[in-house]
Structure formats: C-alpha cells, structure tokens
Length: 267
Image (cartoon, one colour):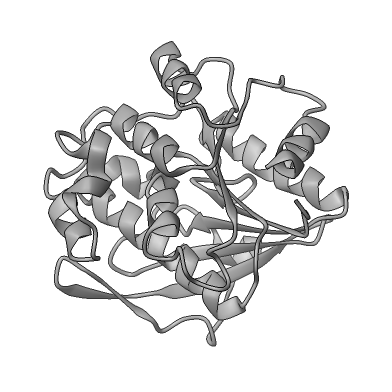
C-alpha cells in the first residue's frame, strides 16, 4: 500500500500530557514516521491539566461547533491545535466543556471522574473522525493507542465504512499496558445503539466494558495489531494472535521506526 498519511489517535502525548511510557511513545513514533517522509496528524483529548498558553494551543473555529449527541444530549465539539517543535508536527486536541475540566491541575478527568469515561470514549472517537472528515485529510493508516481510542475501530468499520475520507484506511491497534479498575458505565451499549450500533457489534463489551473487553473489541474491528509494550497481559496477546490478523510482535523500545513503517506498508 501507499503510505502517504498516517493518523494517530492517542490517549495521551508528551509533552502535553504523559502519565507514563505511552505519552513518550505517542510522541516519538509519529515524529519518526513523519521524519521518514510520511505526512502525520495526531489527535489526543484536551485534558484540563494541559496548559494551553505554555503549549500554544489555539482553537480552530472552522473545525469546531459540531454537536455530538450522546444519550439524547448534545455536546459541542471544540477543536484545538498545536505545533510540536522542532518537528513541526501538528497535534489536534478534542475538547468539550462537558467532559474536560478547565485549568484542572489535580489529575486526568478519566481518573478523577471515571463515571463519564464511556461517554468520553464515544465523544473522542466521533470527534476525531468528524474532524478528519472536515479536514478532508485521507489517511492510509489509522493507528489507535490507549483505551480511550478503543471504540474508534468499531466506528471506522461501521458508521464510517463508506466515507470517502476514512473508509479506505487500514486500522491498526496498539496493545499497551494502560488500564483502569472500574468497568465503564453498563449503559454504554445502550448509548452506542443510539449511534446505530446493534448487539452484533458489541461482542466483548456486551456483558461488561472492562479494560480487557475494550481492547478485545478494538482487536475485533482492527485490520492489524501491534504489541507496543513488553508487559501486555498474555491473554490479550493470545487473543490478538488467534484473531488471524496481521500482527507485529513487540519490536523493542529503541529503533522501532522501520519495524512500524514496514508493518504499515505490508497491510
């Protein structure tokens, strides 16, 4: 395949927000892919701990203003953007007054207010995909990293499967060691049905939207899987292997750009 553009959908990204290895990985991989000659865009949530002035975020008015309906309530979508120097990589932030606190220095909303994490994941997935449509930016690969991006493959392979901007992209999912303790709201499937999904879509999350169930759901709708951390639970790695989909085993913590790029090209 031609590798013209890669869209990264990540739970966090250094230096804007990083609670561990994922933040650094989500910065270094896109940066190295861009340096190898491929156009890159990265989307992350606009958590309240992100200092907008220091990081020079600014709202993109032409991309903001869409209302995303979740559970019969409209939530205005706000899009902000920053340029990561010195690579000049563009980073987009999915923002909402309903899901992300202003000037919150105490921690991530996903940890402090986990009751809304199901809706945050829905809002994030739809916000990313609707923004990419507005940009008319057609990626060859969509690479999802972190549990908050886990619904993105299902949306891509169902609601956006015929979209001229997104329908042709290959969906890659990273398996990581990020986690959470409390399952998402049991009503998540009811809320997803309001977006046009049916029981046939839910599979692993039909009983309970645990962290592992979300990851299995992402694998089910992905085109390919990457083991992006050495400490991914073995049962999740085995689930990915048994899916029969193309899979890149953990390529190591250094000098992994060629491994990822070659894997993208093989899809």
